[in-house]
Length: 620
Image (cartoon, rainbow, N blue to C red):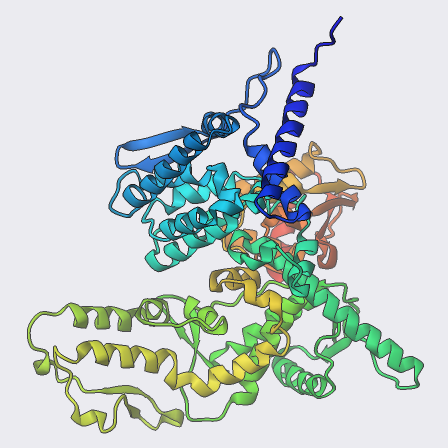
């Protein structure tokens, strides 16, 4: 009696036949055996036909993508599309294959263009074509990439399609190259936020991120770090931390080796500072000394004189909060606060403050290097400059909103402009009350009037002076300090927006996310009355400012990390029975200790008193 194969076994046998057939065909075309075997596996996986039927009682998973077109949203069933492609190619009929190729070329030339309402649909259909994997049709892949680069607002639909692919499928189809074309087109057109190009599968916990990063650094074949736009900010933060930890370990190991040779030195970068008016001075002297000893990249430890806190991370958090609060103080004269945008910008001045600005750059880099978030309010223009991007009129809107509005109105103003009395100069305040200083935008700019013919040039020079020329020395020093610790390859993967998020953390605070990830210890649980009261107070009684102070009290920072508040792993523990004692916290470990207060009002009063008076490792 003949044995009957089950559907899975039959599909496996059919797949093996396809591999053998494709392998023989590729050998005849002149491919070497290794290459032929690799391509045979790829091609066979595309020509195996419709996926097996779903098991009884289980719905079949249908992969669909909704695509916006000129005729409304169109949902493409990619299982059905793959089955059609597979059925055509499985016939092994050259006339059918030729017809499919001809149709693909026609679709490329007629349908994939910004003016065609069905562009996104055509692009998604083409992206699934198995022949794109066939080395014999590499020209078709090139044409498809070129066509994708011409897409208009359909680029988002193609991005969502690519985001649904597995890692293997993306590598086999060279889909990341296609997505790169779409990304570049979007960068020029500015139609979609860059987050649309993040790929969930690559940003998941299961993805071997460190292996991919190491392959990229060694230059070993394909790796997704070659296409950094697919990584979200949190993944890039992990990559940067991997790089920084590696450098810290190398520095630590070097000091230990030198110690064995009789050269005594501390393997850590230790900053011992005083609070208050001495903080900036103490920090400046010790950072300069550490830079001279090439010790900035060692693991950081911070100690405040007269305090017993052991630095396991929490002391550093508070140190960075305090040092930046002082550096941005108006008394130092380094930064100007714009009252409209509430952002800081370097002050244009003829006074040499390169040492101080270099310190700011080093401190910013130290925070990044040691994985701390900061409450610094820089406009996007500064982050763009740090990443080597150009800045212009659009970025001025956040630096000086009133000037931006005036220049935009000037560009739109009809008729002649000479009656305005504008000349090619920029006025600024002089140092030490010396009055107004006029800087020429062109030689003898005071004698060159602004007219309707030259106003575009005037606005361009004005903006470049404000964002570049007037602060060139200050920013150069700031950049030198930053690059001393953050000039590695991983930093180059970041966009300016992602660098801001890495430094400052996420702007939004989701305390529901913090609650869902919280852990409880020493007798407390989610259902313990005091724990229920705690979250009621956080969500319903506290305002935003109080919630931020509570977060600072428990973690040493009032900002969420890149991955959100859920990544903090807050622990709430019982700290004895009801008593007059206030809540306390171990900021190093995001650990809140609460006595088991008798009622909700007592908890509220104690909690408010603690968060309103906490500074340092003790109450002020």
